[in-house]
Every structure is written in structure tokens, then in C-alpha cells.
Image (cartoon, rainbow, N blue to C red; front, top):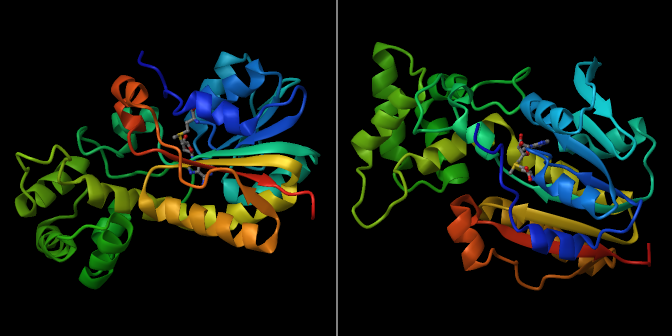
Length: 306
Ligand SMILES: C[S@@+](CC[C@H](N)C(=O)[O-])C[C@H]1O[C@@H](n2cnc3c(N)ncnc32)[C@H](O)[C@@H]1O
């Protein structure tokens, strides 16, 4: 079986988290546990959160942790690692459940894992035919299919242009409305074909024409920007003075939210920005792991003045 996910910028994450022995860290995007493993290897303890049950189960298997379902959340722990299936927008509440108060570092590695993209049944990828789902938490919420068939033309245009920055949003929305008159659009292939009939593959641009629409749908289905906006203010209260906040984002909408939040907290005197410009992966990493190419890492330290 292929690797669940290759952690992005591992050295940079360790450098900026500055892991201290026996201190607590929160990995808000556990995924396959790649970053968590690095923190544990350097002597830290980790509270690992993920919306996706597959991620929690993958890491539980690796560390032989027994999982239980409590109040509809998958949960398990060993002496140095707690696993909890939830949205990181509930960060403060989650730390209270486990009585973790002195947090030395918080890591976000936003977006989707390779597992989610490569597991056809999840419906994240235009390369694999599957039902249009895209939910990270498969227990709740609307699927991509519900948005594609339920939104009106204006709403689709807004979604594709706002969350996908798709310049052909209008023509694609129009084609979707036409196509779904016959029968609902239920698979990734159907949607990709509709997009390809509007946006043809370009000889000069290797990006698949469906990339932006799929991105927009994924962000909307998982309410990704809102979750980030809700989580960020909680991090400052949770960190000890000198504690670190490290965030890797993969598109400009997320990076803008992080950049503005860091600036605002620095102005208030609560955070000190450690990365004037975002850190990006080295060429060797991009060659070895092409999915890392759009990663941007920003880091900040909680000041002593709060
Ligand atoms: C890029 S992967 C993380 C990979 C991980 N750092 C590793 O090294 O394996 C992103 C993960 O974040 C999860 N995720 C995305 N949004 C989330 C949210 N709001 N709350 C909790 N988990 C979320 C996804 O389900 C996915 O597993």
C-alpha cells in the first residue's frame, strides 16, 4: 500500500516548533501522523486532531492505540499521544476535555492528505471516478454532489470564483445547470467532463482544468476557511509564553488569512512573527514530493506580555 501522506517541510516544521522534551504540542491536522512522529521522536507529547476517521485509525494502528467512540468522536491515547477525531475549530474545548493547559506548540498542515486524494471512494480527485463526496468527516454535512446539484447558477459562479479563483466560473456554472437538467451530476468523472467541455487542456499549462472547481467544492464542503478563522484566535490563548504557532497552507486564500492574523496579533503585542516572508519547500523536496510545491510555512511565537 502506498504511504498515507508524506509530511511537508519536516525540517522547517521542527526548526520552528523548537520541540522541548515532555512539553505538549497540538497537531491540528494529524493526517498520516508524519509531523506527529517527528515531534514524538524529539521528546514532545502530542494531541493529534483530524476530522477524518481514516487518519485517526491510521495513526492508532501505527502506535497500537485502542480507539473508542465517545459522544460520536473517535478517541484513543497512549502516554505521550492523544488522538481525537474532531474539527480543529473546537481547539479550546478539546484541550479542556483532556486537561492539557501548558501548550508549547501548535501546528496546522492544512488541506487534504494524499490518502484522501488517492482513495477513489472519497471523491476528492478528478483523476479517479467516484461519487462526488469530498467530506473529510464522513459522518456529517453536505456532499459535493449536493452543492453541484443544489446551488443555483449565481451561487455556483460565486463559489467557483471565490473559492477556486476560477476565471471560467460563469461558463462552467452554465454548463452544469444545462447538464443536470437531464440527470443529476453524481460522479467526479461527470463533473470533470463538463469542465473539460468548457476549459480545454492546455499544452503549456500542466494543471488539470478541473483543479480549481474541485478545490472550490472541497473548501466549501468542509467549510475550510471558516474553520481556520475560528481556530486561529484560540491558539494564542492556549500557548504558553514563548510557545510557537506553525502553519503550512497550500493556497492563497488560506495563506492570506494566516498572514493577516499574524500581523493583527503582532500589532496587539500577543505574537511575534518569526517568518517575515513565508518559508517554501527546497527544490529537492518538491522533486521528491511534488505535492509540497505550493506549501507556505509561517511561524510566530507567543510573547511574554500577555
Ligand atoms: C495535509 S493533511 C495532514 C498531513 C499530516 N501533517 C502528515 O504529516 O501526515 C491534512 C489533514 O487535515 C485534516 N483536516 C482538514 N481540515 C480539518 C479541520 N478543520 N479539522 C481537523 N482536521 C482537518 C484532513 O482530514 C487531513 O487528514
